[in-house]
Length: 231
Image (cartoon, rainbow, N blue to C red; front, side, top):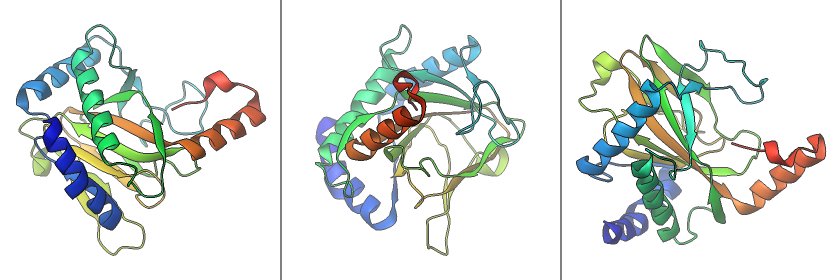
């Protein structure tokens, strides 16, 4: 798999992100590993460890379920019961490293924790938004999907990207063992359309070192609270 990652990074991820701004890899880890990750995501959900996702810039603990309907947990991958998520993170790190500094002008030196997200159905989604509209350091968004036998015509839950300056949209169905990568900034506004079945995904953001440091400095100057700077 690591040999395949080198080829995928060189022949697909780098040129597709450069030309189109997004790229999907299907059958990324295989069904055995994917099943383990799915099981861990379900355990987080059914054990009550997921919390309503928050909107950027809003007060802590205030959710707007009509705008963002997912429930989330942040995971490092080293916690008990999260070993498979840790494997996913190691493969993502390896893939980004193998891109060899050729992902745009970015110098990628870090990433977020994994955001395990569940849309519980009942028409929940996430309105059109940009992951990084303010220069917080996030440059590449990676989303790994965990939904077997997903039928978008019935289950909904499509991620729709509105590429900046283009006349088309990109619809990504959240099917099992699919990895989606795209630029995190204003080039890729996107939405999660209403989901009518339980929908699981894991999102990781990679940081540009310079922009991340500048954002941290701005935050510290404004608030003096270095420890609260996330995502």
